[in-house]
Amino acid sequence: MAKILIRGGTPLNGEVGISGAKNAVLPILAACLLADEPVGIGNVPHLHDVTTFIELLGQMGVQLVLDDRMKMHVDPRTTSTCVAPYDLVRTMRASILVLGPLVARFGQAEVSLPGGCAIGAPLPRPARAAHVCRACFATVIGAACLVVRLLRRRKRRQCRGVVAH
Image (tube, rainbow, N blue to C red; front, side, top):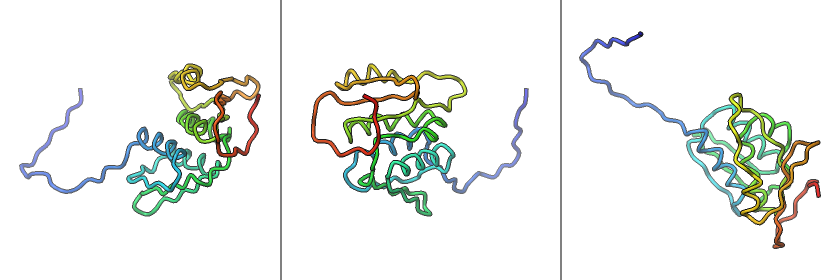
């Protein structure tokens, strides 16, 4: 068994910078789709999944700017589509997080089934969630994507994209 032996006698002092957590910032970025004005998020970690998620939102029309102090400025008012691009969604499980906010914003959404999990952890049951939210849920086998549409009609923002019927 390995052990660490510390010699010294002088107390430790100094500062250590702590970056934000990926599993906290990804749901926050997805929730920004619900905002009607720009949002600022501080202490965003510089990680591959975060960069991919930022690119996913960017391809959906969201304006994102990361400043030199790791603060993300998100403007969701320019979101132009309710379809999440397959090339990015397939690379990470967290991309499923945009499904709910897109349905809330546009009344419908199309998100490919996510990939990116090497250990095969199960996804939450989107069909059950869609039922609770009074939405129509369908899995399009050929495209391997989730299509969700709200059942009750309310005034929604216009969505650019094709959603299966």
